[in-house]
Length: 307
Ligand code: ADP
Image (cartoon, rainbow, N blue to C red):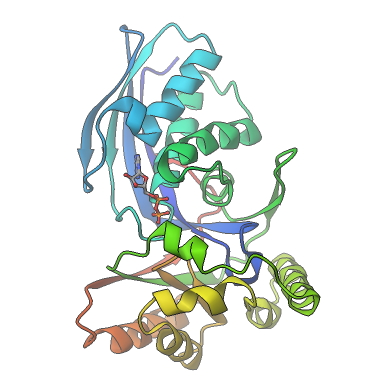
């Protein structure tokens, strides 16, 4: 059995406009890299973190927590040394903790000889999310483990549905480097929504899922509408409306808030349009006085993978 493994674990976009708290997708070219080595000492040690200022103490880092829980559950006769290379910033709304949690679940499973299913790995990774954000949310970690688009159909019991991804779908993402506190993003959410709003929202989820299955880009675009979170949260993200309309004018199918922000994602048909969307986002932010990064990426259909 392998004693060492290097993996890539993707950044993820949760919510996907209408799919608030129920959908997510994984990016192909943005994510964490991690190295896992088996050790004789039966403990988990994080020996290196590059690219972000995160707790190195294993029990405070999502990677350490997920690894330890899996070693305990499987009665493993080895320990682990973990190195983490972060390629995007925590707090971006792109599932930074989820990338570490799911990368760990995937890698430890490989070192255990593929003992667990993707659903079980998602459950382990969700325990990492408890450390990062206080609740066991599944949208980012499930997307990072399964790859492509996922639907969290139910939490009790956990039911993850993989949705097919059209090859030509490309994401453009702008990360304005401001802090959106999770607490604030939660506080502004309505506690109740009118029935009419709920009907529009679930109709769009149906449209989005159907559009992804059929590779119907117009339908995907028409369905990328969020009547619930976006109206409440967009005020927390400077120039949100301008970025969204500039992206649509540049040819994007739709755009919305990634996770709870501040990142904004757009989806396009083809790389050429996705790059035009990048230029349009750049034009909105370049004189804003706010630091930002823009990423263009295909959708990762594999999720976390060995490199
Ligand atoms: P976002 O989804 O907006 O990128 P996260 O949900 O990833 O943000 O939140 C990051 C939080 O998780 C930070 O408070 C960070 O300290 C904590 N955390 C603990 N371990 C890790 C890790 N390995 N990678 C990223 N964040 C981690």
